[in-house]
Length: 194
Image (cartoon, rainbow, N blue to C red; front, side):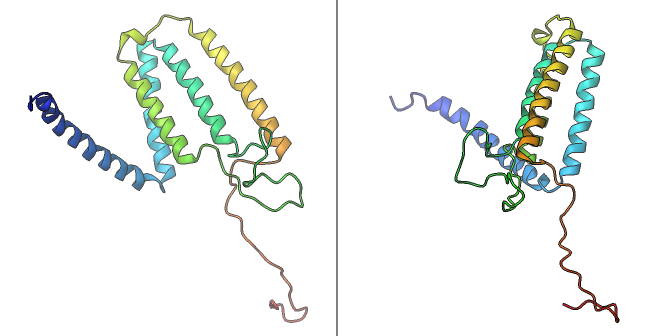
């Protein structure tokens, strides 16, 4: 009984080896794309436009698009939220400063930009593949789904913006902060005296 199950294991070995090699190559290029955020997002927007054109020309798959919209809204909330929410639970880790005299603590996202981009792009890839299967093309009156999603988006963003105002944080960097230091000039020469 030595050969029992051996043939299926030997048949799966090349597939497993190919999958491991593919995973390594995919991770290599994913790692190389990390510092190039602009190009990553441009590539994703090209893919989003292809998806939108596909849904427009097929005139269907509105439920898939609605589910995609809900998932993207969930990702956006994670991207805009701090890692440690001061409203939920106090922590020993870095908290957002609540007073002007508090020490500056950088904004740490619950969902980092790279993971946001990767999940965003992966969601559109999955939704695009789903548009090739008619089982996902559920007949629905799409304006109702669109109105419901817009209402959901507005209510969620209003709550998120109120949270940002309450805890005084901005989840975006508005350029690199530069230290100018104290500028004390000598009154007659016009040169700096450090």
